[in-house]
Amino acid sequence: MSVTRESFGFMPDGTEIYKYILENDAGTQVHVLTLGATLQSILFADKNGETKDLLLGFDTVEDYLTKSNYQGATVGPYCNRIGGAAIDIGDKHYELVANEKGVNNLHSNGEFSYRPWKAIVPDADRVELSYVSPDGEGGFPGETTVKVVFRLSQDNRLSIRYHGVSTRDTFLNFTNHAYFNLNGYASGDILGHTLRIDADRFTPVDAHSIPNGENMAVEGTPFDFRTAKKIGLEIDADHEQLKMTGGYDHNYCLCDAPRALTEIGEAEGDLTGIKMNIYTTLPGVQFYAGNFLSGKEGKGGVPMTKRTGFCLETQFYPDTPHRPDFPSCLYKAGDAYESETVYAFSVSAKDENA
Ligand code: GLA
Image 1 (cartoon, rainbow, N blue to C red):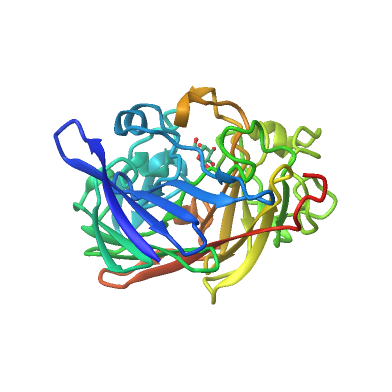
Image 2 (spheres, rainbow, N blue to C red):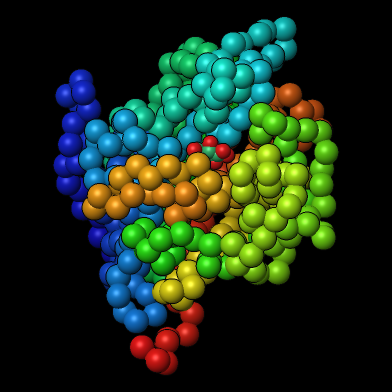
């Protein structure tokens, strides 16, 4: 195992951005940027021994600052959407930035995602990034200190552990917004990937992508991924919820409260045989099929067109601050938020015809 560091460029104010490269003895690499605690690349060998980069992303700081839709970024203090872009805690009212259609707060307007973080290497298999969000940044209460540890094991498990604490009572909901393409980022759309999600229910949304109050069973709908199926099989089916969001972009309900690390699904690239098993301690996962990717050029100048990457953003449910019936993510001042998500990579049987 090794961790090495190289320069990735500079922020407009001159702050240097570093890329940390975690590599295990099998040659698997995970690249993490200090900009937004971003997962930039995962290099993994496919069934024919060819190394593929499994993440959408960019080659420069400038591209991350000007073209990104959160590719690989850490999102916080509250990922996903808050309806009405405002929260109430006790008798205090906090106005947030309405950065989505002037109504929702989405991904905290990028508060955590486009800042320089600090990094240390506590051990030869991990990098720890930290960021201190000043009280009131983006409208959110409290000075919030967050640490994210990315760790790669010899058996190709990438663990992401989050720790957060704020000086005021606040809602904390962190995620990583990796867009995966298990055939490699330059291979076209992800519709041929198979996907399994271990959830019986999901939270349907209104026209602004805010949970509409129902808790819908996946049974008998295109949202049923309890048995693995191709992402593309029913993505354009005539279902009100798919039409509303232009393809899958929904929170799946995994459990009622944070729990021990549990496997929640699996995806596989049809061209590479690269499999990814997903584990998390969190109660929800947003499955987003990259419907809004609009062709901006990413790594190597390859355009990231519609559905060329998919996200499985583990998290608390969207709009939790307005939903007492959802698993709570209100943390008292000084109380620690902790979570872990693991993406474990492997290859299904070697291609006999290769
Ligand atoms: C999330 C949302 C999507 C989209 C992307 C960023 O996953 O659910 O609707 O906004 O982030 O483009």
